[in-house]
Length: 227
Ligand SMILES: Cc1cc2nc3c(=O)[nH]c(=O)nc-3n(C[C@H](O)[C@H](O)[C@H](O)COP(=O)(O)O)c2cc1C
Image 1 (cartoon, rainbow, N blue to C red):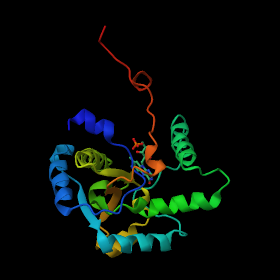
Image 2 (image 1 turned 30 degrees about the vertical axis):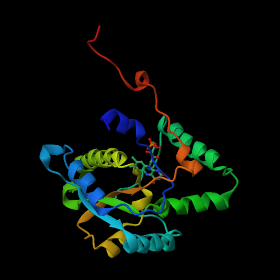
Image 3 (image 1 turned 45 degrees about the horizontal axis):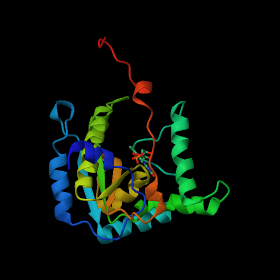
């Protein structure tokens, strides 16, 4: 599969088959993903890759936490100024439409939220974390390790498509980092950035028909010196 095909195929998957992802495949993906660039080759990323009973334990603990306020290591945006809010809302509106969940149906909306906390039933997840001392520097933030995590996250997700695997990068996966620290033994000196749920997509589930839109290139780009 060439890179353009992988980019075209990748999209966030929100319903998975229960089939296990072989550890060997995850290893192959991760070995190659490590070729991602990073600030001065600092390679700030670390991973916890979880499957089976351990993942069930996390799912269970997350559901028990669901009524508590989330406390992610990296705070969610406080505001979404325009045009970001409109783009963000479009995802929710379309997803609920595809699933036939109405605005008023609070119960099904809540259920859907819980599905996110349950990693959409993916059989495996890759948590990415960084060293706290590299990100928090006195009273300022060094955002670059997190930026670098984004680069390797995309590598992972593109490589997964080669194995017919689906992925979704999920902030929902890291909303309760204390749970992950306890179950996975991740020390306080690490900040948990993101979880990527990985598994074989359930293409029969309508939610996986959702295709997010992009702004046209001309809206987000200015060209200089090409005349
Ligand atoms: C950092 C990050 C966190 C995300 N967290 C969630 C999440 O918690 N739940 C979810 O359903 N989608 C999540 N997404 C997926 C985005 O909604 C998705 O990438 C976006 O709508 C574009 O769609 P696409 O991935 O299908 O191209 C996240 C994406 C990123 C990059």
